[in-house]
Structures are given as structure tokens and as C-alpha cells.
Image (tube, rainbow, N blue to C red; front, side):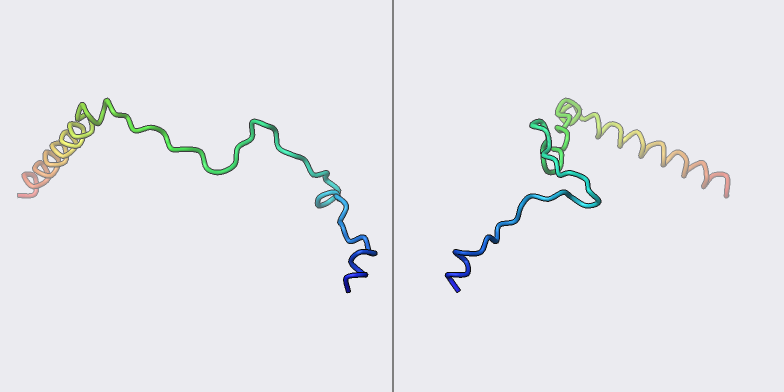
Length: 73
């Protein structure tokens, strides 16, 4: 068995891809994987922008609900 391995050429030669399209190597700038997620907006988090927005939306919801209750009664 070892003699066969020494004598026979079993290395594969590079071939073309599917349907005759040549294989290509990506550019040097090409990167693999998922892009990183954007950074957290620290100024808005520390400045409580999101908390104030949520509070304003909650007040608006309660106003709409209270108008619905008043019109139903």
C-alpha cells in the first residue's frame, strides 16, 4: 500500500468553479463575519433621553385612554 502512495500522483490540480467560472481570491479589504453593532449612544443614555421619551409616550397613551373612557360613559 505504501508503494502505491509513493508511485501514484494523487494531488488534485486546481480546477474551475461551477459552470466554468474561475475561482477568485477576495480583495485585501474583504472581511469575513458579521459587521460589528453600532456603539451605544452614551449621551442619550446618561442624559435620560430615552426615559423622558418613554414617559411622554406613556402620558400620551393615558390621555387617549382617558378620552375613550369619558366618551364611553
